Length: 205
Ligand code: SF4
Image (cartoon, rainbow, N blue to C red):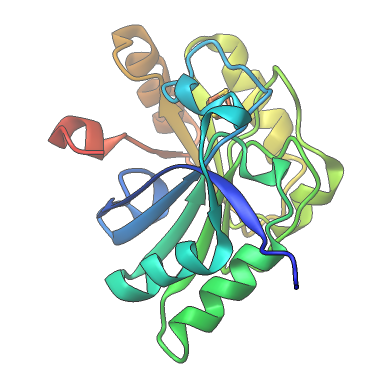
């Protein structure tokens, strides 16, 4: 009997993408369990322990996306690249058939790239910098800003991605000083855009 490939799923939900270039877009989120980056400001700490989340067969995850038919399917975490994402994206593409739903990845890049994605959002963290394989396939770079040193980190990471990559600075939620710092930096550095967590302003996931 063939082995059924499964992933630890924290939650699957239908909402709008709140951040970055796709903000406002109808999206299904698949949040995978497991993360050893351990950012201080993490708002999904419940996802860190990979063993706390039930394993879900890959075809069940893909069926969920196929039934909802969003504009985009977003694989997030946790740190999704802790898992081999090839079978997951293959199954989702099979379930979607000829629809034009695109598959996105949100990652810190801490592990080697896997999966077949239409869009990759890299949000690199100083706590565990990205694996070199990730930088070549990034459409969007997003840096969370809480202090000046994050802006230096943003410039360093920006020098490692393709020139065509969209570059976003996102102030840490609930931190007015970070908001002011980020806004002023974007005004002085037009290659950067401001990303806000609009879903949090709306009070939705
Ligand atoms: S990489 Fe993401 S999920 Fe992991 S600790 Fe940092 S913010 Fe949380």
